[in-house]
Image (cartoon, rainbow, N blue to C red; front, side):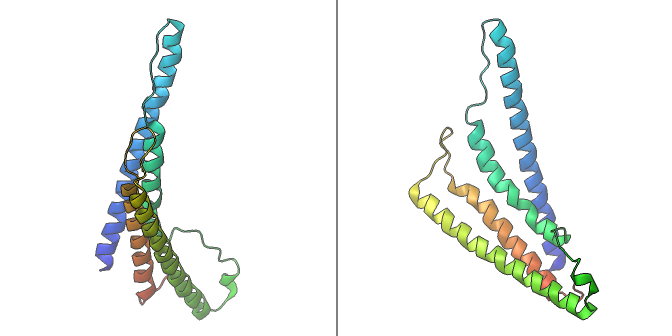
Length: 165
């Protein structure tokens, strides 16, 4: 199971990276169009920016932003302030580590629950992006999957016998 969880977290983060690259490319094209528009304006021409650029970036970044959480948890990359804990006994440190893993899992599951409620409300409202007219509810799915995977990774680490200190 840990090997599968690791592959899922890595693959999910790579997919988030691909989505971020798409955002960067679309942003570069849009900025280039603005530059060309300035240049074309000198000669009486016009080059439009990408219609719906803001819609795409807003929806794509909402999906991509959370896709790195499970990988970060897998690598224990989240911020931890252990300046006070370093003077405690090893047993206490392990206990606090296990408690924090459980707290992270509970928090991620709590946020998953609220995202599911938000998805349902967005779906029932028929919310569409302003310019592109895309339904917004599908963009909740990567966030829900990310948070659920984050909780699973934290729970896996919690139940591992050789918990990290």
